[in-house]
Length: 169
Image (tube, rainbow, N blue to C red; front, side, top):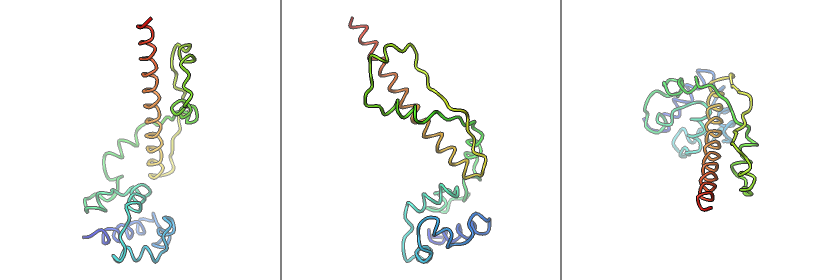
């Protein structure tokens, strides 16, 4: 079964399960015309990687299924997503975190005066709406963990610089 056939099977499954009303709705949600989607399904145009990625993220479709036919079709059928959805979600205050990570005016004097580095957290947030909500929550959590990692790297660099300054004195 080729990619076009797997896309057709997937779209029919999305319609049967009520995730999508019809092909036209799916095309419009992505920004295609319904005719363009039909051309893709008939093999006259190729499916873009952006479209495959979009389907994977929004409808929790495993890209492996679309690309090679490897089952299961949906991510929620795998243990990975079930384990990840059990993670308690707590998010860091994005504005404070991003200001700290991407600030170009990193003031060494101010950091020397600080005796500890606190990462401020916002209240825990949970998305309970749907499985796509779980994906959004996991994506946001991943982005915040990356930002936290960048902040910690910067803090370690600062501490190493301070240590070098004190060793030199």
